[in-house]
Length: 130
Image (tube, rainbow, N blue to C red; front, side):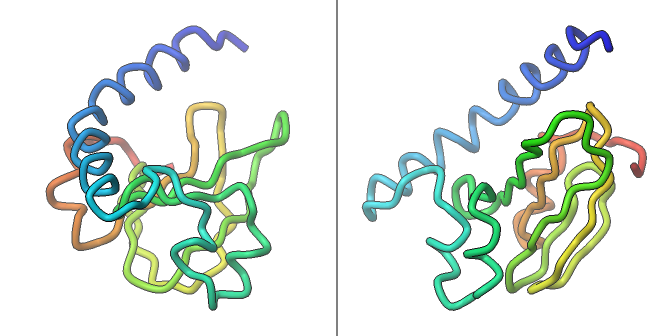
């Protein structure tokens, strides 16, 4: 597979995320929280959060579920309590919930808190459902 175009898109996404990352880093410093937090850090009483050690919160509003196996087509993710939006498809999920997410090479599963979605949706752009 030609990964250069995929990398290019993720590099562009990272640049679009910079304002959010700066905002969240400053907020975290103010209260002593890291920018990247394991899922169980924010949801210590959620037993399923402990079963997904690679998932993390990126700031207060983004949940990232890294795909760690080559050629995976479906990835099991845990979405914690609250209302979340899949940033790629716009699908809404109410947690806690187990989600089997299709993961083509162009997708890293990411959810945004529903309350933050109106201000962050432009970061991820209008993308077709996947």
